[in-house]
Length: 201
Figure 1 (cartoon, rainbow, N blue to C red):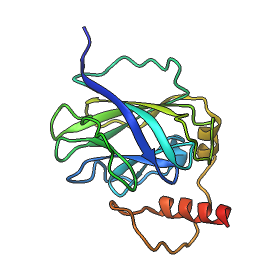
Figure 2 (figure 1 turned 135 degrees about the horizontal axis):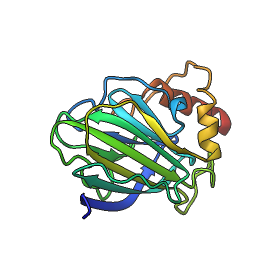
Figure 3 (figure 1 turned 180 degrees about the vertical axis):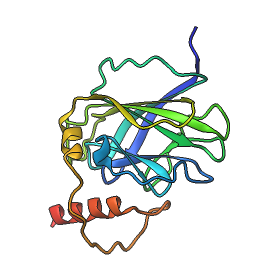
């Protein structure tokens, strides 16, 4: 018998190599963690950042909320990582860095305002690194279930983009940013923007 409560899929816009998992009413974590820890996620400003191979464009995201721990099956996924969060409001949402989703995906949280575990799966990140493809090249599955806090762990690390990120963060740079996104910008985002502007110039 499946413990799946609900699932849904849809396109999510990416800007500056990332999209977000967040609670609309407060931080899901007090920790700060650079993407070099697992090559997929970073924790910044109370939210989870999912790092993509494409610079901008759409990725396909499936969210799946469970009432208990789902079986781990890497299957075709190249990267699979887990981390713990806390939802103040009982809503854990997938969102874009700069814009609202045209069709919102349902909340990942089913246990109310409590601790949850996220398992993030990714594939296709090596297909169009640093590009803005017209078609979707990357797919993500995000599973969530109620669970007490536990250390992050990696279940699969098999793409080149993740290996590049795990090799360490880029040297910090100072870059003025005229416009902040609706949810603010972390140092990592400012650095990505700075490097993107350099490559355009």
